[in-house]
Length: 538
Image (cartoon, rainbow, N blue to C red; front, side):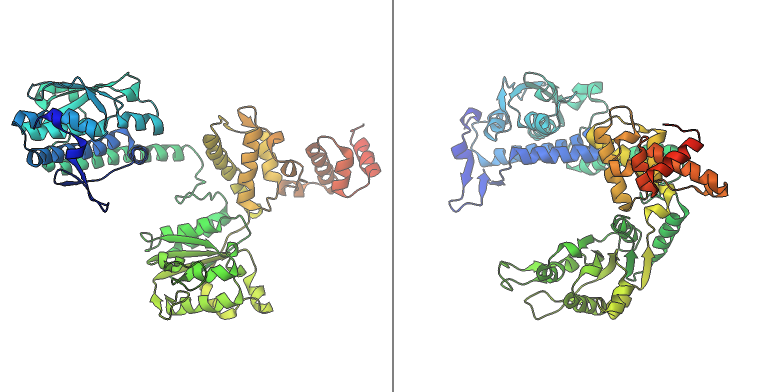
């Protein structure tokens, strides 16, 4: 058999019943090219170009090595040379690329041209045009195949690539010794024995990069006020610092915690901190909004169900408690669950076991329960709406998160972080807030807390025209809020406090005296009289 005789009908065999495809004596798998492209993007995003090149190149090398071994044993070649020359036809056969102008593998330098490389195509599709060749898997395949053929390390390297804008991919393969300094610093892992060393080198590179990044972060932190906790939660105010300190103490024990606070203060974020700094940090963190699930489905959602237990239950399904085994489950809006579920949840907390809907046996679970609510559960217990035994079982310790209006020192740091995050996501170059905008943010009471503040910042970024957010860019209800007197105002005479307060409201309303009088609860004539007294005529 000659290399030119390699044909799909003979090289590939399909089982009549499906499921098994063989190439020679080896099992073959079919992969969608786009799925490999998405994997490439994930590797590049997580490990960078060099890390992704090492992994994909190593995979290609192993594939090529194994393919050469399979070809040697699976087909009756006319001569060893025909087996050696099969790599171009094989790459075309497998759909890797259309290989043209392939040289003789017996030569010291082996060159070929690839057209329609799947790897270049996928890189352009998912990552974009590159400054360097990108057919790492295919170059690794040629390296592995020729290394097996020659019994020595052969390194295939692209000199041109469609992934960087060339008309076609051109590849040159020769021994590492022949390449010399031309491949110095490039990842060229050969042979099974070098895989561990290659991965160790990659790990060391990543470790060095991480250390540089951490140093950079520390430098930035030292240049700014220490307002962001290591958990990523902003804590410039003493109230929030005390809350985080308590959370870390509670994280050391495995007791249930009830997290209370108004809507939007970040209860789930604090629940994540309790999990991340506990002994369960390596386990799953499962969050569920109890108010978002109907009463009829809540039991199945939490505890799972057996096949046929109700209409639509076509298979056994574990619940969220089982999904959180050896980890933490966060039950948000716990005050909204109906009385029937309160009884069942209490049993789970007491016995540490669940029973799926439609089953008659219990299953042990090892789960820490964190519950959160914006309701006054103690009042609900008094009115009979919430079971007292469940309340005390959940509230082994309680963690109260103060609303944003009680920790005003956190407002601007949270706003600045939200500004940076949203501006980056939207591709906007906005550096910060004007003094007037910052003053408006500080005056507003933020009844929706952090969530409302973040939404207001996104609204402002959409409207902003300049390099900074102006007061006019903020939502109207935020801009037109009636300001509160500061603590410094309380040391002034009452007449002066009144004057400053009224003038500030007038300024917030852009000089609209009718609206100002209405907000202050005084008559328009009274406002006009006071303004004349203060030298503010029409």
